[in-house]
Image 1: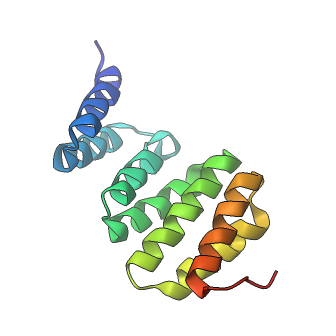
Image 2: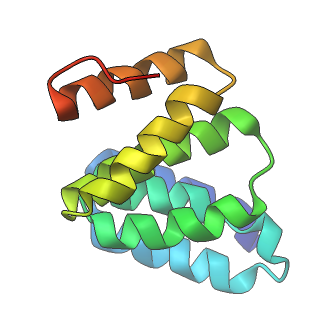
Length: 129
C-alpha cells in the first residue's frame, strides 16, 4: 500500500482516539511529502487545530489553506472557524471582520445565518447590515 493511502487511515484513527499529538504529527509528515503545495491537506490540519482549541495554529494553517482552496463552501466554513479562532485568541476585531464578511458574502445561506448569529452573540444585539 502506498504512503498516500496510509496517511488518511492513520489520521482517521487518531481523530477517533482524540490523539492530537499523533494527528498533528501525521498531518505534518504528509504535508512534507506532497510536492505540490495546492494538494497539501492544510485545511484538514487547520480544522484539527481548531477542533482542539489550538487557535493560534488554526489561524496559521487556515491562512495557508485559503491560498489554495477553490471550493467556495469550504472557504466560507474556514473563514467562520477562523473568526472563532481569532476571537478565542483575543483578536476580537479580526474575528468580527471575518464574521461580517461571511455574513455578507457566503454563498450558502446556512453559513451566512451562522455568521449573523455569531455577530449578534458578540454584540448582544442585531448587527447593522
